[in-house]
Image (cartoon, rainbow, N blue to C red):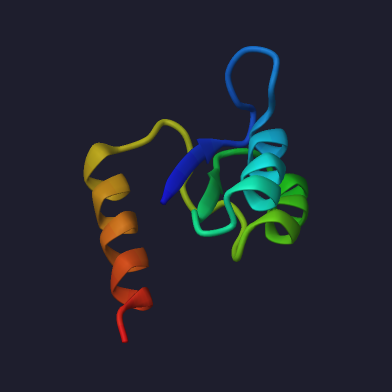
Length: 75
């Protein structure tokens, strides 16, 4: 799982990273976090769901989010 902020770092946005990963490493799951409600629709097109975590990120919330994500993937 790759958690990436919608705004990204440096010259690339989170949307660009998600697009690249989807095209080049489809076995990886990218979840975009942060951003606005308007960004959620674009995120949903690139990922299985739109942003669900908001800034500032609480470490416990991030751990819980990843734990729930993994649990939903188990057979």
